[in-house]
Image 1: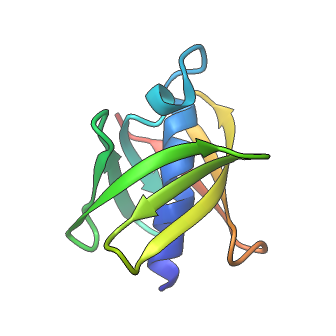
Image 2: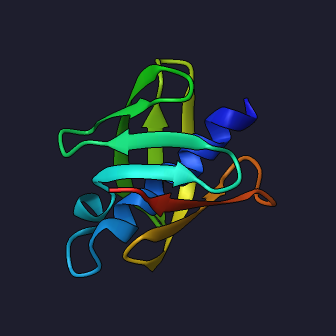
Length: 110
């Protein structure tokens, strides 16, 4: 479950880091690594993604509420949400909504 939370946190960061001048959705497109975990995830422009560590696909979207939220959906019952903070073009911090003490940093690989 912790790995899923890490992915949720990574997804939003990936979007923001990809490009500072672009829309948040465009910023996350690319391949990202969860710092300290060795987990690599990819976000595609069509809203699909892939977790290489767990070898599973997911759907993602960014939702603007009070904060920018990254929503990752592995299946109908397994949906994770994280608050996204873009640190710079290649680094994102994700704050899991269910575990507010868990801040995950993801860095762009490509």
